[in-house]
Image 1: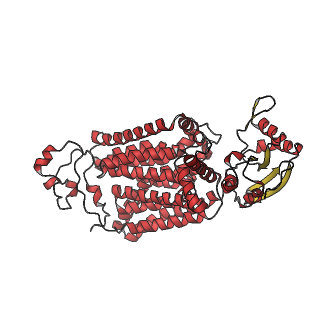
Image 2: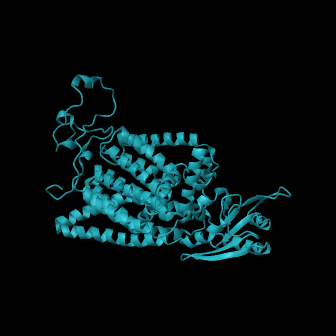
Image 3: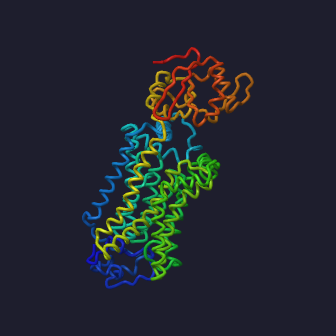
Length: 564
């Protein structure tokens, strides 16, 4: 902190910018932005400089500083975030998405190692089955579901570090702390930190791509440029929905840092180079992946079938999860607009950057309003919230400093607490609510286990991925099937059957040894096949109430009994 009470930026923000025009070098080739430091020695003698190829200017790197004081508040934020998410990790059994991705990861690993057959996950997963599922399966192998969830927590903690570093380069240490605290306080952040799905990994990769874009404009060179583009491609391959924020990261490369007006070619060159790196990486990956991945991307993301949720419902859910944060970000944009109208010049560039970061927070809600679905919205809103937290950190820091100058530092701290505190309180409640939305499957899996054995027996189970994950050691993936998209060829006529007729014909032929109904997602199908089960001689082995919401009816075929 300087003598006048302002929090100053780290030294790296004073380095020359990639291709920056209009920088007036001082004595020894040091830009005016570095006038507070002694001039760095020239990297080459004068004769050698004449022979250097044109390109990026050489940036003198200062010695690595010791542990900064602003890392201690960040550590406190990370500890609180970790504690809130860790509480969720231990609160429930596997969610259906967790069981799906971990189980798929085991299959992919077996396929890579031994050539074992594997389901065509690339055709219906909204992310590459060779990235997150493989990584999380390795974590699950090492320490079970809790280890898989701790991996997500590590990803989300790294995203908090990334928003801190990005904000510190743009607005200083106080703003960085406020941005990190606001991001950690959100319910979706805490939820993703305890959920073993590819959202946490994709968000963390996207966050570091955003940080490298900021670093590119505040002293980074080609490593930051290439790294940002490659990480964007990796985030998009991990979860296709992350591609929605590619223009935002490229826009950050254009608008952040010094470099003249918004129309400056040097600014746009940075963003275009990041975009070019991303396009080349995605193009190479698409060529290597093949048509199945392209079809899966189209089916799950680009040409996704619209849902049936009302606009108002989707908007209301988004407002509940990130509405207060976006409202504070809007105040930050308006404050920057007033500042730009008064000062002009570079302040206008900062205004457009703040507006871009606010728009990033709106992208997920607007997109899902467009397709009439709230499915996974509680996860997707956190991607955009990461960007909007930078604006929130900046406005909170300015409010703290203004109140400190007018009244006392205590008034500024109190104002920040009054914003972040309620966010954290409500976020913790939302995280618990999200983790309680699915049934605890412990009793259900225990009741089903005696009937499951590895072999040729087939099991028709609604949302089978959770029991298949827990019982993977005693079954094959080919034995499990849910009640959606069932296809069967009639052995007598050769006719292809699908849907309810296919299920009923399989029941009549006793092809399904175990059938489990819970009358939730496929309630209409359950009601249609229940009379067929009774007519075909299936008996109710048990009815299990598992958790607060789960009630499972387990039918077994005639002559089929417990295998253990």
